[in-house]
Length: 159
Image (cartoon, rainbow, N blue to C red; front, side):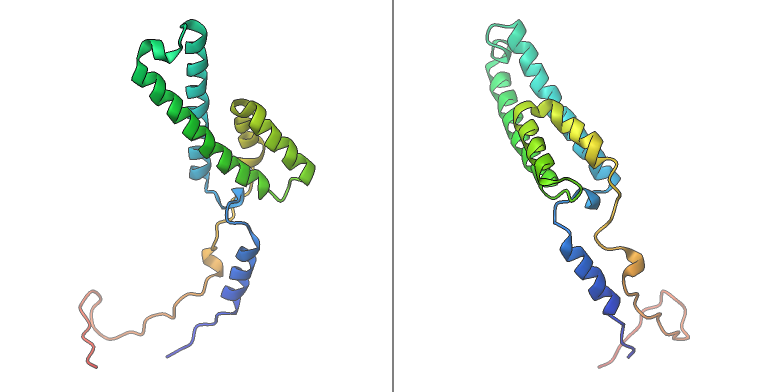
């Protein structure tokens, strides 16, 4: 049996171990769009709650008690989720210095509905896509030896 060379696999794994687990570079374009959609949904939800609070005396609670409580719970949960995701992205962003990271954290905490989409457009979307394992750098299995039988027929191995 032929042995597969593994030196370049070890080099690839070493390169990947230096990169943080949560980094923008590992997000595919579809994941980036999904993150933006979730962010804009959260912003829209929060905006609808603010508008309802400005128009109605008790906000969405005037419309329906369950709707008001449920919408508030979703907004709080989604806000926490987005803060964790974006906080991790800022903390692991190698292109930002420590001062810029602190500024982004403060912006997220103070004006999150505005700063989250701004950060997405400035730092998430333009980042280069670097998948965790590049197929060209992985070892390929040796080609199968021709057996002389038609392909798709079962092979019986006796041990």
